[in-house]
Amino acid sequence: MADQGHRVHDLTPEEVSKGMADGRYLLVDVREPNEVAVDAYPGAVVVPLSTFDPKGIPDPQGKQVVFACRSGKRSVTASLAAQAGGFSHDKHLAGGMLAWKAAGLPTRSGG
Image (cartoon, rainbow, N blue to C red):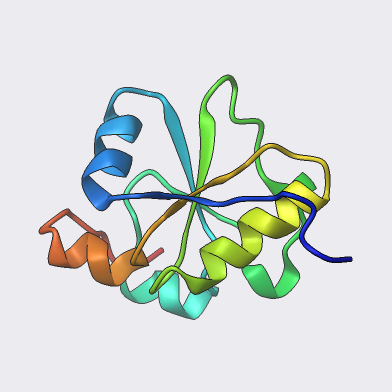
């Protein structure tokens, strides 16, 4: 199954943070639980890529789903997988947790 016009849009940490604060984005962290235990995105839901099923994403209730990971690779994979599954989730946090922390945005520990 080749790319069927699926695209993933990059969002900056600032855009994601503001979108979450405004109630426009639901951040879905696709990292593994051991990674999330070290540094978690505040307010994100965790749906690990290793067992990823787009149906496992909670109802965004009108928000746009934005995927996030450590560096931005797995979030693209998750977005494409969700699109292949019939969902319209086409946004991800470019640069992931590395960019989030570099932007000085808050994290929480303990998952």
